[in-house]
Image (cartoon, rainbow, N blue to C red; front, side, top):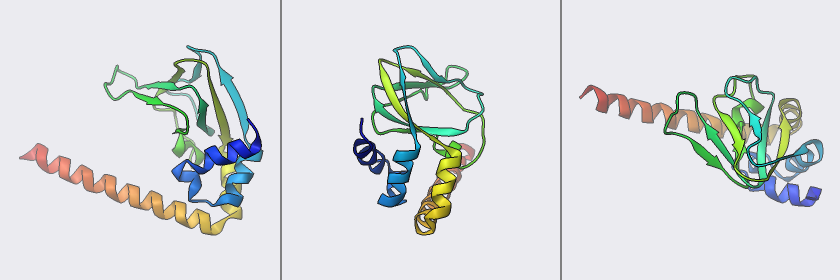
Length: 149
């Protein structure tokens, strides 16, 4: 895929769209593409993280330890490892290619440089994360109330 194709794909990812076109272009230029055969592992649960991945082609099955029923399939345009772009953390799931797949790998270092150079985009992203956190906290309060009744 060309840089222009990558820019279009990255702009469809809500997290990156908040940053604006100039930041997305820097991410597209500074990232790398990786390809995976069917059954190949992108990462395993517990691995240290230093990047996020945007699925270009194919899909990945994300399975959580303990055989959770919350497994996810991430297809084209999905951002896998969003929080790993912000903070070091252990991967919570194992990601396995369901068929031939390709991803755009964006390192935390690159992402943080983009945030430093795009303060308006960084503020929009901070506001979105704050909104999501607030919504998750509200949801937990509602669920907790239902469990205690």
